[in-house]
Amino acid sequence: MQPQHGPWQTRMRKISNHGSLRVAKVAYPLGLCVGVFIYVAYIKWHRATATQAFFSITRAAPGARWGQQAHSPLGTAADGHEVFYGIMFDAGSTGTRVHVFQFTRPPRETPTLTHETFKALKPGLSAYADDVEKVKKVFKASPFLVGDDCVSIMNGTDEGVSAWITINFLTGSLKTPGGSSVGMLDLGGGSTQIAFLPRVEGTLQASPPGYLTALRMFNRTYKLYSYSYLGLGLMSARLAILGGVEGQPAKDGKELVSPCLSPSFKGEWEHAEVTYRVSGQKAAASLHELCAARVSEVLQNRVHRTEEVKHVDFYAFSYYYDLAAGVGLIDAEKGGSLVVGDFEIAAKYVCRTLETQPQSSPFSCMDLTYVSLLLQEFGFPRSKVLKLTRKIDNVETSWALGAIFHYIDSLNRQKSPAS
Image (cartoon, rainbow, N blue to C red; front, side, top):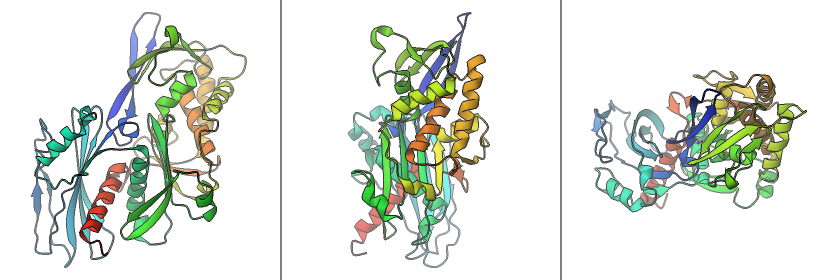
């Protein structure tokens, strides 16, 4: 949901015998928990006589320093084609990312993304999270078309649905009515999302309340299975596995002891601005066996399992990608495919290594074990193939593109209610 978002920084410090500190930073996607979600859509249609369009985003936020304009030559579109733009500000804790999308659309057909301009600046607009009206005033003063609902705080379900739109648009699934679609898995720091389009009536009937979302896009209605599990993101799961409570220091400053850490490990871990003292524990059984038992306790009765995921192609993002790349299951730059069981194999290997050779990534055994069991709780068999990627056709697989599509489509319906 990485992402894709402005990270909070969760820091882990390993204390050596000499008192020196090693600091490792782990991205914690803000948008998955309490991020500011800002829509700014600038829509302008050009006919075939249009030659090019220039627009500047230097006035989008106070203090922004871009140094250049986003320049997208339109060329000569085929007669009757529409060319329009959408601008999405993804506001996180440490920075704000701006996506400028250029689309073309033949009459009554699905739009095509022809260009994306991406910029990032600091600080993040999420500093205004407690006063969204201030953000609205900033954008109302901009040269863009800004609706009353263009600024909002995003929830996990919206993010999952938007990510599903993005991946299915980029893979071409939305262009073919009735065609096969793909599912989406996103693992952030605070929450994790799953979304897919059910084809089996039993899935719809068996889904708990709140797991189905009706979505209208491009004159078609989709009923998605989509849910965001707050508290089951990788960083929040770490805290739960350690036995801590979200947002609260350990009682009486006690050390959090975990069977998922190397028996010889002692250190500090910072999460959500709270620092915890953590350590491993000595035991007769294997590290992976003990860790898997603890993770299973944390996941017990918290995840809904559906049989249909076995038969749907899924793309996985964010920490799924980062963890797989970190242990060599996929190429760190290009991504790749793996089977769910690969996470378990990697977890067993890393846990076994940590038993005798503590590494610079003391949470790797815990994280890989958690991801392996989380996927199985969702209903994925060990043989299930997942595709892990950050980009498709050089476009980020984030929720931003899907969100702007959804917003533009809603604007079009407001302008033409009869359609």
